[in-house]
Amino acid sequence: MDRFIEFSKLLGWNDVQLFQHHGNDADAGIPTITWYSEGEFDESLYFQLNIMGGVRIAVYYMKYEIFTGWHKVDSEDLTSEAKRLAPLFSKTNFADDHIMLFKERFPQYTGFYWKDGGGIAQKGNDKRREFVSWVSEEDEIPNSDPAFKTPG
Image (cartoon, rainbow, N blue to C red; front, side):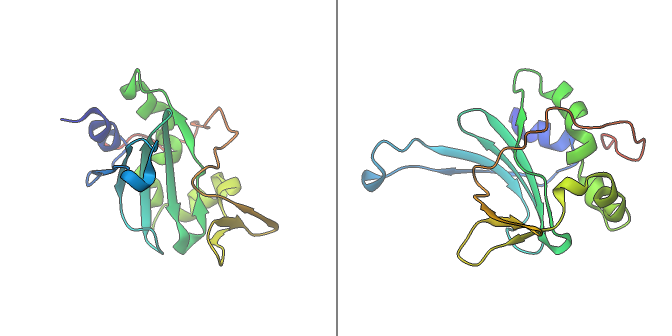
């Protein structure tokens, strides 16, 4: 099995699919872009793992105004990374019975919405963020709450 699909499953994302965009003649010099995702880019829950210039992970859940930002993933030890990232990226965190606890625990990832004309913005911060390039400054992900753990 693909190691990034296995990594996603460790976080509870069991329906992740692999996607690629191959450059064409009009895209001369553009490399193949690879990503894994589950869900749709609208009001539903959306998980994405990008593989380009490093590995990055993010969750969008616009129904609840959540965007985690893009977090770096150490692709050398994906099992350890799944344990480290589970407090933020475990799919169970986004279940209806956990979502309010998630928003209380991670207020920095709340208040997001799609801006007219593209991009993502956060309420109270008029500055538009290009959702494809914003990488969270957070190095540490809190994991002290026992409600947030790797599924399984």
